[in-house]
Amino acid sequence: MKSKINELFSNQTSGRLTMLSCFLLVALITIAQAESESLIRNPLFSEDANADGWPDSWGKLPGASWLKADEGFPFMRLEQKAPGEMRMIYLKVPIPAGASEVVFSGKVRAEAVVPGDQIWFDARIISQYIDVEGKKMNDGKPRPYIIAKKGTCAWKEFEYTYPVPEGAAFFQIMAGHFQTESGTVDLAELSLRVAE
Image (cartoon, rainbow, N blue to C red; front, side, top):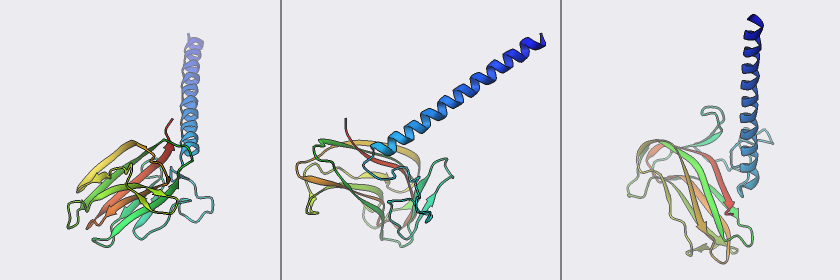
């Protein structure tokens, strides 16, 4: 009887370890795919090859911090330090020739956002196409994604597919505080990829 119990326990433990190993393998593959498919370098805010305490390929700005373990994944926090000012990260991402659509996705949340003087002074992501000369393009202009008009919101995911207009060379992203008075905005897993 004792040997049967030991055998059963051993089989259950082995099964759990196998399931855990499979789960970890799938998670690692998913992370590797997300980073390799994204046109944004270091989309998961996970790399710091130069060990400067800041995620590679992401610019530093006042009021920004890099948090690595608080939520189980790395993310960028933008705190409004100067009421009424723009406090946004900025990326200009090259679009591969021949791309007809791109998919922009990520995770965002906000805390205690106080809007500015105008109705559109809130926490948001602005994106637009830029031509090879650096001029903004009106064709196919994506709409702003509102993170929070005011107050607090939990982590939420977004994903949008945008057609690439003829002549577009870059997809420009500005994310954070659009002239808010105060609050914090968190950004994670920002990715831009060519639609399949």
